[in-house]
View 1 (cartoon, one colour):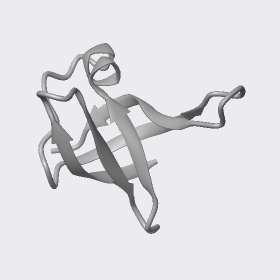
View 2 (cartoon, rainbow, N blue to C red):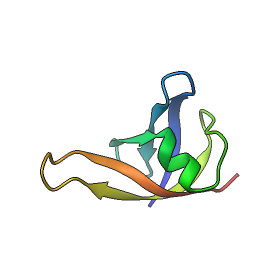
View 3 (cartoon, helix red, strand yellow):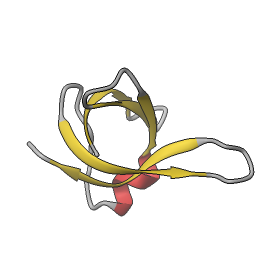
Length: 69
């Protein structure tokens, strides 16, 4: 999926990505950013990502991020 970083707070270690073509925000955690080899996310930055769902809680979040710009 493609999306745009809505915001990311490095102090809190999380933020949200707005999915392209939809008004859906996806949670992103600092750990996912580090696993992707990225050092930061910036507001407005274009990224690709996959959505992962916890089957027990139903919570979703972004993983396998790639910065497009």
